[in-house]
Image (cartoon, rainbow, N blue to C red):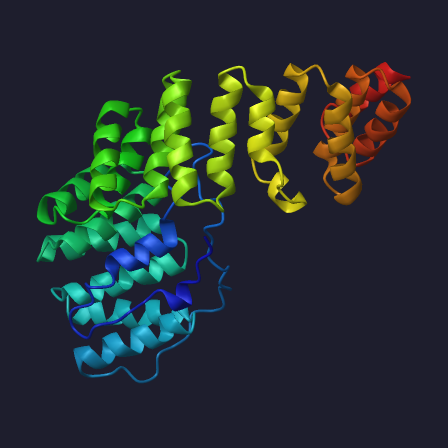
Length: 342
């Protein structure tokens, strides 16, 4: 999931609350899932930091200020928005909407700590709506403040019991806190509120793997794949469960057909190699790593793994070739392997 802060703001004059969850969800969705359960493609563009501009003409009306700030954010002019809102807050310290807008600026600047500070101030002024609690929770999670994130998601859930997002995000925080029992309860609640929520089933699968229940993990992973058949992530979780069940060939089958770029996603190639190892087919693992290294010549870790697998397969000549490539790319461990092969 890719995200562009210039496209995630929907501004309502004077209120500014309806878009909070959309903003945070677009920015952070998946980034709060543990380990492999990260949507991984969530990103925001890097915004240059020029000398802060001088706002030469300050709008007089609050709505004008908020609309001007929104325009700056829409165009990615975060410093202008920050300058405008900072000045406006100094003169209108009790206007909640200004703090909300200010928080969104810091989200755009990828500064979740500062964004959360503004949400705290907005909540202190009130009203403490479910949307604002959710936004604060998402930002607190991004800032690593898990206890506060849990509090805010809980508050959002209490206010709006029909919204699937709060239990889902709360569960992901609880997973980070290793509170698996509560996380499972909230994930199941989220699936009850939104039946096609693949990420909830995928997270349940990951929890089951952590609890060493590979059979249940496989069931949940297959449900996630059923809901999102194009997801590489759920195929990976399914394959991990199959490998844990001593079914390496079925794990490989679950990953069959991935293109080269998909194989480079975290966890894919190591798992494929491990499955070939369990099948006592080191030459197959070596061939795959070699092909990937040839295709992506600047990825030294692929060359190193190709060398290691060729060594296990007894092909010392090929092992040396790829060890030399890895050594040239200054990959840790490559020189030691090359010395051993000489």
